[in-house]
Image (cartoon, rainbow, N blue to C red; front, side):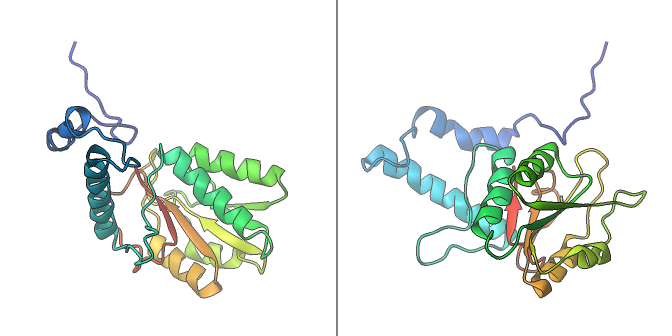
Length: 204
């Protein structure tokens, strides 16, 4: 029986070009990027070059201070947790209100659920029959206590692409941090964090 795999939103086989590019770092250039010796510095250079490639891809930047905007984590789940919980606790004195959509990935839902147990107020915005969040609903939901809005870019289950640029513009106007989970979309859909007013982006 012939098997057909249709779950590329979850995971894919490694592209042959990617495998070829990575092969040296599995066997020859395997140094620890935190080490000061040649092997470590060789690996660190490759890591920093990769960081720049990703920054260019989303129109991000690398400040002269040496603190990159591109942060590597162990997974998209870790990235989403870092975004939500990091912003929440760093801005607790400003407010305790966070807005998400009702179709976020489970890791965003769980992060929000946990933050609620820590005293944060969570608003889950509904979507229409196409799975779209209405930007005006975001505007109406923002209060003086809102510190973060997190809306998924592209749904991994129904394929809906949210109006991220419009939502980001509203958040920027209101002075609220905007996060989008783009784990399913980066590399498939063009993303410009400046044009789309994205403060935090999760990719995989």
